[in-house]
Length: 353
Image (cartoon, rainbow, N blue to C red; front, side):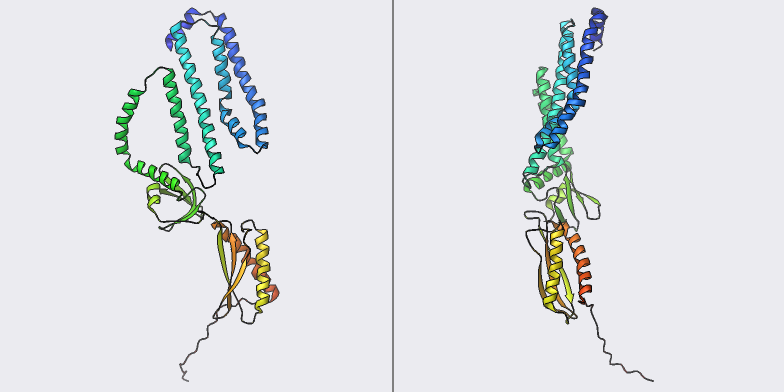
């Protein structure tokens, strides 16, 4: 590189640099202006549309716009400068590397974005996790590297041979890590769990699956604590998935009323309150209405169960919370008693005076 600059210094007049420098400066300035005014307006217009692809394309190239304008203006500016052929070849190769690297970076963002959009449209068919995202990005960068090597006329056969030999040693050293990687792939492809699922493990942990990475799966407990589970352990664990197939969840709320209550009136009032909650709360599944079933004659009450259906497992808590508040208030207003257990103690002991 130092030889190139010495050649440029020795063979070129300062006056010959003025026009090329102006071209580079102007081109770069146009890049800033294009990004600030034209690209930003296109982003605003894209956000208003329901089509996600236009947002993705514009966002993927955003970080490269100014750099592309710089490269184009630099390429145009260098055409007017006479440089020795050997140094011109070096400069051309550097420009090719920069162009391919920049395009590869944009392509990696674009491909990863396509994966995320596609996985959302698939529902539970294909999960979007950092494992797949990283794999896609690494693959795109690897292709870009191969293109760069090919453009530089560098044979990759010796490199692949070296990587093959080195890969054996690395696989032995990273046996546990590779075991977690393949276990993670097994979890995703078998759809045992996916991000967003509420699950419980045979070891007692319960929570929402947040992400599946190369080595571990992160679970968010309802207490807002994060648990990191090695993929190998999760793959062999007994998992109860509350959100697989149909994520809707049946909710049973037991209640008891006194034996003096009018059961027809109790049933009418309870269903009125339950239907109010069913209509008002977004957590309730609208396809299934609340129901009431009398269950048994209890020790101090006639017991029954109110059934709701939530959209998912986590919806049960707010539904139960609201129902207990409202039914207690309504029973109190209607004069319906919710008895508490009564124990009658009979003692055979005689007191001596």
